[in-house]
Length: 260
Length: 260
Image (cartoon, rainbow over all chains, first blue to last red; front, side):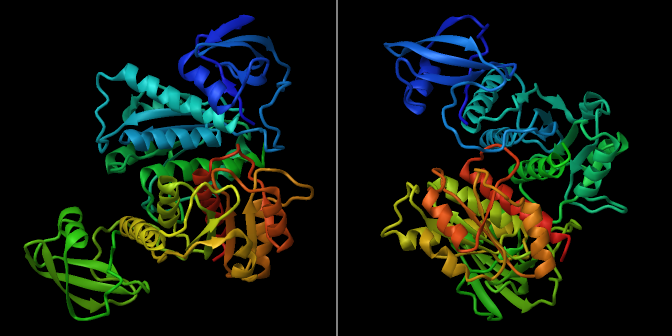
């Protein structure tokens, strides 16, 4: 189901207008005309039924009505999976521009709850002084992915933190794991860890920490493990950062979703 | 473990030379010098121990020796997972250039056995008359991915086939599934299908069919199902083709690998 994601400035008014990229998306991608009805959600995930009342010089005037649990107008009607989704937080060490965007796009498609960019020792990305630009870029990637996959999870991207802050930021909310392709003694597999997680607190969130292109330093893994994070080795090849991110989110999601 | 993949022209001679991209990879990416030893595999997956005897004007002269089951020289020594890998065949409907390459790269990284590009009704890719170019491009993507992840699966890419040929090409070698984000009655989940598969013939290969950007037509799914392919609906959002490919290969691999 394609769902239009309302601009962050939307405040639930009955009438509003969009122009620029948003108008382009509605008229060109979704091919909406005057009188067309379609489903939308605001930043909180609430559904709205929207009707285009006028299209004029690249501007769409829209009237909107709060929808019920499900929107009345859906832009396609495939009877696909609609939830529930387990709560997954991805601490993703910063990768170069396009790779980071690919990670954000693909994990948003999957329905990850929150992505927290992390700066770590082997990151090659300098994040100083571009906060606003990066925030806008990541926001646009998330919005596009949400609109395309009609996810019922309103994925958010947090501001970057240093890897040393992960343990306190996570604050023991649920099982936390660091993806590390080095085997250690007495290691549990991802499925064993998540089975234990489900037994202890089936609906608690989980955290995944995924490295940058350069991986983690030994010191970083040691201090995450000391903070209660479990090192996880997948029974597969050593994956690049962008593959490890989408694979680990997908695996965790499918292992957890059957218990919801 | 990084492993150099020998050129297809390699015939097991004791001495040989490489130039161009291969020489660049050895001297710049792996940073090999005269006297350096490193691990390599040929197109059949056999390991070789190589030594650089001379570097001269962009050409590397190399002496090589058949290695045992494991190469003596490994270019890094992370104690990562080394196999076994389940045999997975990916029938991938053709996507646009960069997306198809991303799918080939990521599923090769994961250790997929064989990728069969498929032309289907909603493919927007015209594959006529560019056989050689495409074969070279896909081959280069696979080689680069194999070298980077040190996979012990020598992934191959077949020549494209029409979607109507999939059932006969697969020839009932094992459980075959078509990823389709539409629910049908009495549908088994991927994990149920693979549990049945493992009980019946634990080491048999499996097949996954993944759609193009435009998905499948109903007729295509119907005729795959009539041919014994199981429709699989993942409990997640509707994924773009490139995400569906990497996710389904990763899920199938992790569900099967614990039974090998």
